[in-house]
Length: 138
Image (cartoon, rainbow, N blue to C red; front, side, top):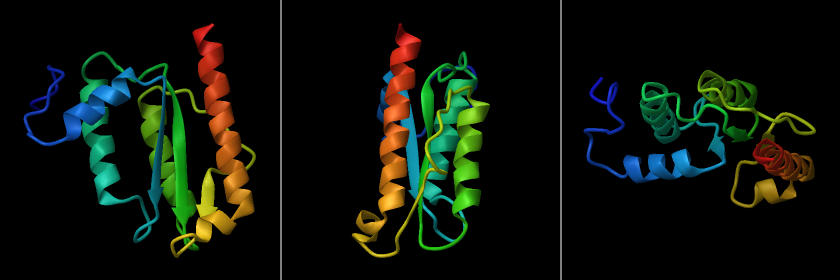
């Protein structure tokens, strides 16, 4: 709870420079492979720590644009996408959609390059992120 009333973190690691870039960004996309049924532990730690700092210091991410993108081999992709989406919803982001859920499939290096539907979804999601950011700035 050390960062509850101050926009700092007592843990001396590389989080705060990343948090500062996230705070300055107009849009944020978090992406994760599905490991053992959910997002990676490192991404979850980033979400928990940056979310706590931002939420308790004036809801600093509120009104930003963002959303998740997930890569899965074959299962738990919807759970992981929901897990990441909850972070964006809780912190007050605007989340545009795409043509399908923001998911691509692949197991080995390079597999995602062959997932045409996943690549198209990622492209459309990126376009919608940029579109919404532009609309909100005008």
